[in-house]
Amino acid sequence: MPTIEIISLDSARLDLNQVDFSAAIIVENKLISHRGLFYDLLLTQNGIIIHIGNPDMKQDIEAGFYAGKIIDWQFEDTDLEEKIKGLKSNEDNCYINQDFIFRFKVEYQGDIRRIMQSAIDSSPTNTIYFLTDYQFGPEKATIQTVDSLKMFWEQHDRDGLAWNSLYKIKEK
Image (cartoon, rainbow, N blue to C red; front, side, top):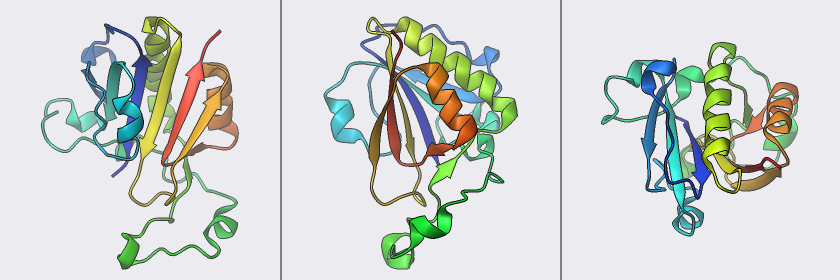
């Protein structure tokens, strides 16, 4: 069950209303991810976190919250065979290293774009983090810097986005 979260760095307030989105959202002013992959990094930051979830989770945000239904699982990683060479994926390591990249379903891309733009606009430094945490993703987490929201979406559309990654996006 993948976690997708967006952080508006140093933002004190973010005006997002659940009724404006098809995907479920939870907005919190304490930077605690629903998973622990980037826990230590987030402890050193301030801002607002937006958790993105499946549309059917809008009414029950207290239960498990994840984003599997907004992911295009049909998107194929053309380099998957090369990526998994020499990597273990079995019961002993909880089946990590099975999936490396993803795209959002087309019908949720507008929601994600609007949330990310709002997060950038609310950040005094115009900086956001976009993070993913997926138990079947790569064993090693990565941090990537992207120069703009436009470039982020170009990467999404061209190559897909990496699981278990934090993307730092700063608009100039």
